Image (cartoon, rainbow, N blue to C red; front, top):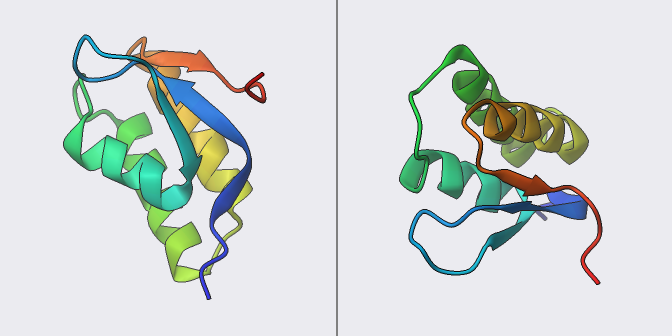
Length: 86
């Protein structure tokens, strides 16, 4: 059983010029960090990736991964919102 969903999704700018992306879990955040990340691989990026990995392994709560991802996303200006959509 995988319990790595975020209580409130995180919205980030898409890697392409398309619509913003809604990330709902540590897995989606990890995929974004690995495959769509527009900036440099900074310490905050590595911390976010590690936090996502820990959440996916069940070692840490998804909330920590979400928080680390937001910090990294703000650093490279891809963060849009951490409010519930709608």
